[in-house]
Length: 187
Ligand code: SF4
Ligand code: SF4
Image (tube, rainbow, N blue to C red; front, side, top):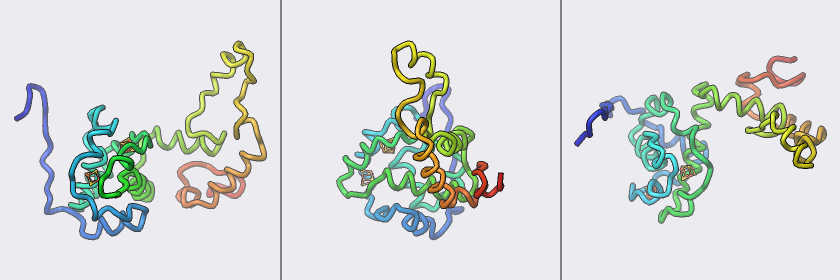
């Protein structure tokens, strides 16, 4: 029963895409067919707690029903925290986290990325961190720390290595972000 103010969306299962589960298997979600929809992964998932409509168990359910377009039009998979609680909890060793990542890989190939994800990828290429607070330099100095942490952001050699790896991934061929002299934009 719906509570006051709640809405629901009717999903037409007859529009499901046959072979979607096979695509997910090829993208890294090898054990998706082992899922028995017990819900243990959902009970530990921060996405479910935060109210996202497609947390691990529901993503798997949607994939098994071939609902590719529904998932591509929803941002839930991008909110996964990579906490791996679902993987530790699953009694069938389905590895729901890997299925979330497989779904992201499918989404990237369809350019179905939210702006925040593109920002994260660009930051990863530029400084070696998907999330990096450049404005943290001043507070770090006040605490007696170097302006930049001792990671790729302060190590040009390591950053060049990260960039070289990223240029070899399919992200480079997608052209979502500029990737330097060897990247898709050639700049
Ligand atoms: S815990 Fe495992 S078997 Fe249960 S719903 Fe989640 S993925 Fe499926
Ligand atoms: S890894 Fe992602 S899907 Fe799994 S419990 Fe954490 S947030 Fe949820």
